[in-house]
Length: 235
Image 1 (cartoon, rainbow, N blue to C red):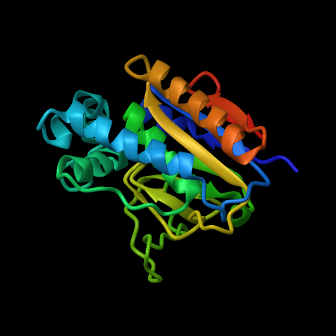
Image 2 (image 1 turned 90 degrees about the vertical axis):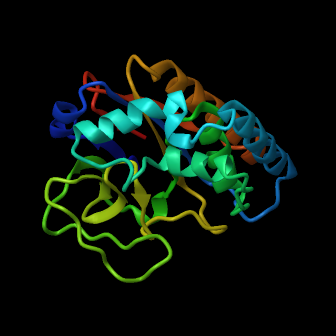
């Protein structure tokens, strides 16, 4: 059974140069330990710390396009930092990111290596199409790690499936809906870029993620690309 990922026209009106790499993998075992992923994750964290050269995460050039996009959307990036900035800010403070499970660790490693926001969503929790669109009154968001719904602002950019919000404020904060657990077997990864600034890096991150998923999990991923001229992909 195929599923759909689409980005609504209203999003491209607000962010004309937005682009989205897509990777989907099915039938994997996320319960076993994969030491190579842990080593890769550890190495990328050290390399990111060296690249920062004592700068704050928000002063790291690859973060600029996302902060500027947030500002253009009326989102204060100091109050609501893009997910990749939040990830790098922990490295900036000299902290080691915790290991969660192989899929999450691999996604975080690729996100850090390319300084590209990268999400991971359990497809078994997404019965309807996955979309990036503006919020509606029916949408519901439950913050990661909690059980209580949180209010959503009007015309907020969301990742959603039906009315289940996956991520608020575009690439700010992920929800409990569809989080990756050791039992997750079918997974959708979106990578968010801005052409032409980092479109090539977004594609490179997508391709390396797909290659490593096949290497470590033994399944052939689907890869796709969504932008203003091609706003939908089926997988």
